[in-house]
Amino acid sequence: MMKKLEEMVRYVSEAFIRVFSPDKDEYPKVGNQPYEAEPYHRARKPQ
Image 1 (cartoon, helix red, strand yellow):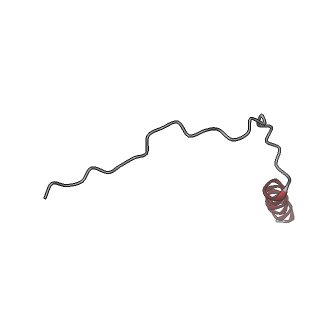
Image 2: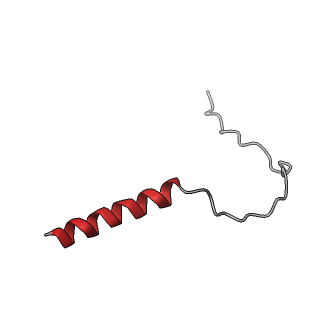
């Protein structure tokens, strides 16, 4: 029973560390990208 409790505590603590650790994303720094698409306009229903 103590082994199960120990495994559960380890599982929860590893998840906590993973969620609250600093980001490890290494995306390139490309800056802002211009918007090059046409805006979406929903078709109006004929009246």
